[in-house]
Amino acid sequence: MDVVSDAIAAVRVGRPSTDRLRVAGTWSTRLSPYEGAGFHVVLEGGCRLLLDDPGDSGGSGGSGHPGPLTLRTGDAVLLPHGTGHVLMDAEADLAAADRAVPFERLLDGSAPRPPRTGPGQAELLCGKYRLDRSRTHPLMAELPSVVHLPNRVGGHPELRAAIGLLGGELLDQRPGGQIAVPSLLDLLLVYMVRAWLAEGSAGAWPAVLGDPVASAALRALHADPPADWTNDRLAAAAGVSRPTLARRFTALVGRPPMAYLTWWRLTFAATLLRDTTDPLATIAGRVGYGSPYAFSHAFARHFGTTPGRYRAREAEPPAARA
Picture 1 (tube, helix red, strand yellow):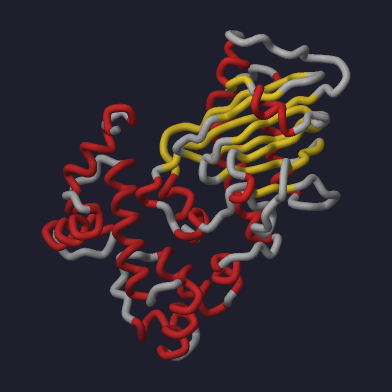
Picture 2 (cartoon, one colour):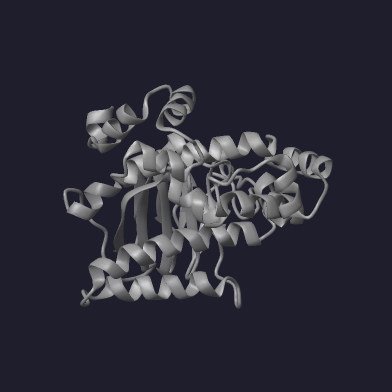
């Protein structure tokens, strides 16, 4: 797998969820902070988004927004860290945030719902991904609180195609939809992260993946984590000298190549413990450890618990872990 795929796969858990919201007139709704990532896609009309902490916001490239973010038809927005926020009609003032109805109550009908049609009509796809923060890859951790991807002519065609397909699947219940919708939601997350990287966003990881030396080394490590890697062998794979690799990789990634490899092997192992029933010996071999004992020792040092206890904890419902 490549770095972006691995970064998302390591942190994603469970199945994503989505709702379709159609409103008009004057309205505002609050989405509380949550353990995961959220997204909104404006299918029709427009609205505004206000973070609970506007000073912590960031759009394409990570630049802060001084106030509400205006969203128009075709815009997509990703909230990678589950930051609480308010959605409101395009004409609302900031005081509307104080009157916002909880999103869940708006959906289940326990709160008065604004009209579905009329002046200021808007339609949105709103969804969530469950994420496990204990294994967050630095690429995902670096994403700003808000990634705004405006609808531009010719911009990010894969993202636009995924939005169109997802909107169509959610409009009507079609055969195979229970497989199609979660798969399209996963694609949407990949395309939004990819679009953020492609837009020359500020931060370390767009620079890392744009650097020929660091990116070549990362591709090699992620393609074959259990290989008998050394600095010399990795430098040869990247086509540079060992000192050049060490200098470029460490400066951009933030840790030396072999330290990154150790971290990634154990992070990958945690994902295998969560998602498979493979015995410890099999997992140890898949991540480059010669014996279950050596693997267990390294895993406990990194995660503060044994692989067996980690697997048992991950098998519990989220509420039971709290």
